[in-house]
Length: 494
Image (cartoon, one colour):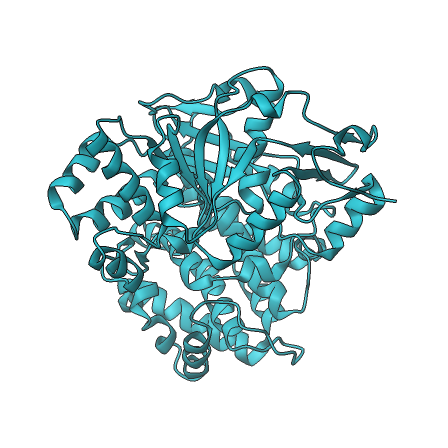
């Protein structure tokens, strides 16, 4: 019989499950984290758990919070098990489970007063966040902060009194610390964005600009927003994972996290208020994160986009199943070699060909259970970050773009809302109805898809891309996904 996870149950979980060897009642908070979803608990919280296990830096425990309704349910479930999480790392040949204990409390989303009180606490020296790529109020066309978004306007109109956005809360906390004569905390994004520190700074200061421009200047000049690259494939948790945890490890956990063994975290070492010694557990601190994050976003995330839409159209459920499909795996390999990696700048001490092989191995891991639908999610936010910048660089340098154009065409066909087998595709983007309408128009008029300037900007006016996209989309509709991939591979001599 499985044991329900709690602090009292730790000693009864058995030898297959690692448990904290440190005293959690001796931890004290140093970090407030917004967005305690699966990735955070598999990544940042897992690194801190390992650091605490080594006997170091017990004054850097995490206080969790959130800004979405779903965060409230997460907080209640974690509180019911004393903020413990079982992290199961899985490779093809083995699985390991460990209960992590780096989080020690959670503040209810919506309780702005209590959240800000935590932010103003002098012990809080880092505020970190994982609010997803789409949570930064970025205009997709310009990739700049959008001060006109209703959420941002709402916080500004209320002059940061009881803010509802993560950036409003962070801004309110910073300004209250300033008024109290306390040094600012460091703001650390752990989201998968190019220049995530710069993006976060633009959101916080951009919001404050609407309320108090002088305070916004102080934030830009004084507050640290280090850039960072984060990487660990972490699927959503379903009943499948909960049952595996019960059957294989005897643990009943409301919110377990299953992930791959691989992890990477590269950070700019810019923490004026101090930081935990994360280098002791494998975090890389560097002067410039940009080469690492560009590599990861273009090769890994761009690779995910490459396989997800053809797989989704062909009715393939899991990512590893897509990699078992020889044609899709070949499409990924050739596109990376021919169109993506050639426009990735050199990365210090990194062999991009070896990195590519690591990515292909990670995608093929059958234990992860990552789904194609998760990779297809929110394409209107992800395509402008993961595919279109590569496309722009390829156009600028005169390199081929036929494969990248095919990726965009397959995304368009996916957004039509039906697989090639005739099954309906459930809405999978915040703007799904609009995307479906545009995809219907593009079936006969391909340029209608590229007319979405909030996604494509001026790319729709580039004659070479427009021609490549139009040919790819027409071929997908007339001959299907497989024939279109074969056409591309043949054109590259593969």
